[in-house]
Amino acid sequence: MVHQYQITGMTCGNCVAKVKSALLMVPNVSEVEVSKESGSATITMEKHVALNVLQNALDPKYQIAALGHAEMTEQAKSWFETYKPVILIFAYLLVTTLLIQFSRSVFDWMQWMEHFMAGFFLVFSFFKLLNITGFAESYQMYDIVAKQFKGWAYIYVFIELALGLAFLLNFNLVITNLITLLVMSISIIGVLQSVLNKKKIQCACLGDVFNLPMSTVTIIEDALMIGMSAVMLLIHFL
Image 1 (tube, rainbow, N blue to C red):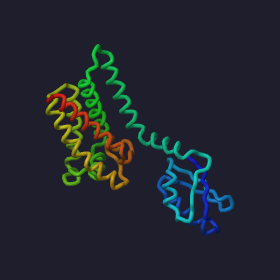
Image 2: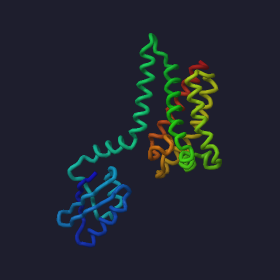
Image 3: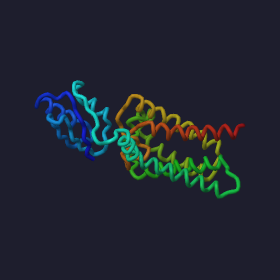
Image 4: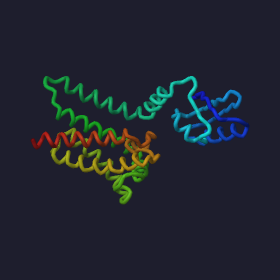
């Protein structure tokens, strides 16, 4: 994609060179054309780069502003394109599991959660199994257990697969939910640390099939499984 920007503060050819060089260093920026006369820059990007990222790359005396496009709209489009695989997976799981319940005379919330969690773990373990070594290498970068014991990354994939089958078969929901609660609670610690420390690393939730950055989306995924398993345990013991 190509976007136009207004840049103020450039007074000479040296300024133009500095601005161009700085912008070319920004990830996903492939080409930059800068004009001192018009005070503008034409930037070619592999995917949309937020305005604040471009500004941070420049010396404070240079100010950059969007021209000809709505920055918020472009950021929303970029976010959707980045996380489209996860969004589609959750949409498919949500619609499918809801349709199963709506086809019955009584909506069973417990069974809906079982089916949703079964689909979640089966689908996510499937993508990890496509390249389990690639997943393990990414997972070891942030998971607190995998950092200490590399084999945990491989074990984790088969735990997800087993949990998916257990929820699908309605196997001993107390044990299944306790394991889910424990495993996902451990997993979310490393995710939280990475997001809070603003580490730029790849999320391994879908293996290495999709290049998804670690973000609050990953936190929501893990938190959702933790929340559902906690609710199911609470309902069981009440």
